[in-house]
Amino acid sequence: MQFIDECIIQLKAGNGGNGIVAWRREAHNPHGGPYGGDGGDGGNIIFVGDHNTTTLMPLRNHKIISANNGENGKTKLATGKNGQDKIIKLPLGTVIYDLDENKIIAEILKHNQKILICSGGKGGHGNGWFKNSKNKIPNLHENGDIGQYRNVKLTIKYIADIGFVGLPNAGKSSIINALTSAKPKIANYSFTTLIPVLGTFIYKNEKIVFADIPGLIKGASQGKGLGHDFLKHIERCVALIHVISLSIIDNYDIVDSYKVICNELAKYSKHLVNKPTILICNKVDLPESQKQFKKLSSYLKNKNILCISAKEKINLDKLSKLIYDLFIKSKKPLLDSNDTQVKIYQLNKREDYEADIEIIQKDEGIWEVKSKYLKYWSNRIPLDTSDNIIYFNTKLKNIDLENKIKLKGGKVGDQLLIYGKELIIE
Image 1 (cartoon, rainbow, N blue to C red):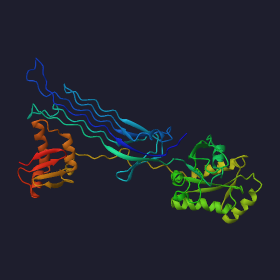
Image 2 (image 1 turned 45 degrees about the vertical axis):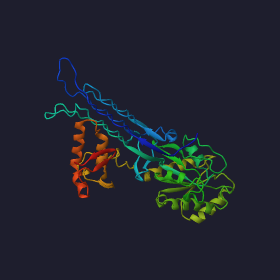
Image 3 (image 1 turned 180 degrees about the horizontal axis):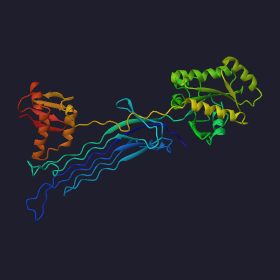
Image 4 (image 1 turned 90 degrees about the vertical axis):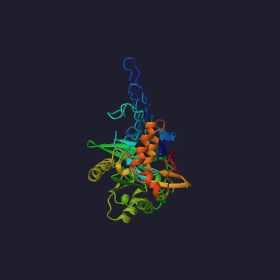
């Protein structure tokens, strides 16, 4: 099965439905009244942590993922239906990057953890909403808000308690196979394991998740071989098990082989070097194992080393207890993400009114005006009724736009360009 642990996708939440202008027309009520309903809210896009999902493969062919738009309002003051939310299941350990803002938005660390990644647009109001004691027949309505849009990169960093590291053919997969129900492919060639294999080890009623990190080589920290693709998967492990083969075929210079892994971990991240680590020498059943072990132990001097044979099941009981003790001593609760919901831009706050206003003279008597506030209300208020034109002008007065333009040299009769709308200074 092909494995995908990184992908880039575009996310688009649903737009809010438009409010409508409608009038009550009934024989028993000849004077009628405003009868237009509000638009429904657009659907959100929500990431959900799922411990049964292990790959980003289903997202590979979906470059754009959209939620449904809200329905437009209806007559009889009926609100349109909300757009259906788009739920996207992600593996635990998924890191979510916002490519436009160049930062991490959130991380999926728990089963059923929910991240509101793109918020749907609010529905626009119909003319029934605008009725009040001063305006009993409002010819007003609003378009729905535009749903939030994001470009994101998803990257999996597996959540495992103990990470097994070592050169190719060290026997990591065989050890995990012997201790857990994981069944990785095992053979005598480099990079047999091409994806991080997870296995659950149960000891004294404690569940410990192992991650077999595919064989590292010299230069892995700079991306050589499988490089960063796999080093990143041990960043969340609370402890490491360094496995080294006692076979002279695997390691002609066993000391150099030991140094290679230590150096690559240090070059990739000093944090990895500081993780609690135990050293396991595998394949103790081979004739040359004692000679190899003496070389390594002489170099390491007083460092504790456990010799085992995954194939012949030698010292696996001692290894089990050692792993359990290491885990109990080292385990720390995973940090929750800062927020379960991503902050979104709110456009109805007073402090936004005068923020980021940009006035550009395009030509003699022609001015273009830009701001987040104006962009929002230009979409929100269609200029298709006289009441809506007055409504939009009220929004311009809120930021004193006319005087701001006159201070820059504008005059009565000049043309204003505001996000596709053309107005005249009076």
